[in-house]
Structures are given as structure tokens and as C-alpha cells.
Length: 175
Image 1 (cartoon, rainbow, N blue to C red):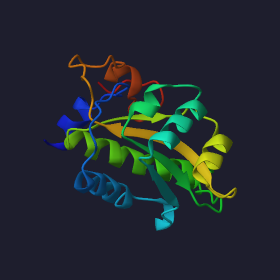
Image 2 (image 1 turned 180 degrees about the vertical axis):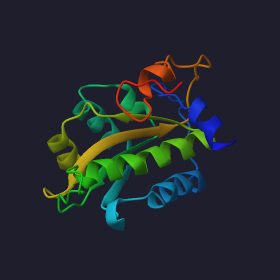
Image 3 (image 1 turned 30 degrees about the vertical axis):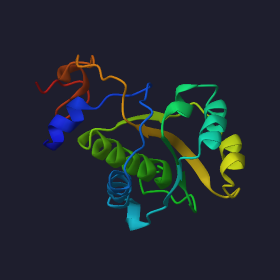
């Protein structure tokens, strides 16, 4: 698949088969995260790969009771070991850098025939306690990973390009 085809195919998966993720596929997905760009090449991202059934169940509770989290064969806690540095534009680096790495993992998983769902609804302190994550580490997102029970084939609704793209100045449509 080409990258554009992978982008169009990606869906958030909330129902997984009881099938393990092969180690070579998991490694490729983690290598994709490692290859992601980061501000000043600081690479502040860190990942806790969780396959233990009981820990996944606990994480589903910490994810505001989202039961499907426990059914994914893998849950990845996407974290940052950060000094809170900011870019010149004023944005803190680590949430952006970790998110780019997550997107690399999501697209690679899609290409490999796996499904993912990024989870932003969770209690970070509970996740830290479950996974023994040190207090100074930031938990940015959780990512479920596994084989989808089914994948919707219909395209997701998106705003038209002429509503989101401007040319030369705000509000001037370019298309």
C-alpha cells in the first residue's frame, strides 16, 4: 500500500479478535515510532507495551471504563520523558512529538493489517500507578493494537478542503 492509501484506510478500532500480535509486526510498529521526527531531535517519547491481561483490564478502568481497551491484545502507554522545552512558536514539544510517533505507529499498523485506537480519555495518575511509571514521566495517550473484528469500508466524513484550506491569508479560499 502507498502512504496515501494507508491514510485513507485507517479507522479507529474498538473491537478486537482474540489473536496475538506477532512480535515482528510489533517491532516494526515500534521502529516506526522511533523513526518519527522530534523537535531538536530530542526524542522525548517513551512507550510501555502492555500485553498482560490483568494490566490491560486495569488500564480499561483507568480509561474511564472503556471495556474495549481490555480486549485489545496490546495497549501501549505513550509517554514522554521531558524537560518541558518549548519551540520558538511557544508550543511545548513533547505532546506534538509523541503524537507524531503515535501516528507513525498507527499508519504502520494499518499497513500491516492491524487496527488501533488512540485513547485520550484516561486518568494519567492511575495509568502511572498500574504500570509503575515514575512521577516525572508524562502519559500522553494510550494506544490499543490488535486485529480488528471488522473494519468499516465507508469513508469517514470530512470537511471539504475549501473550508479548511486558505491561500495567502486567512479566509481567502484557495480551491
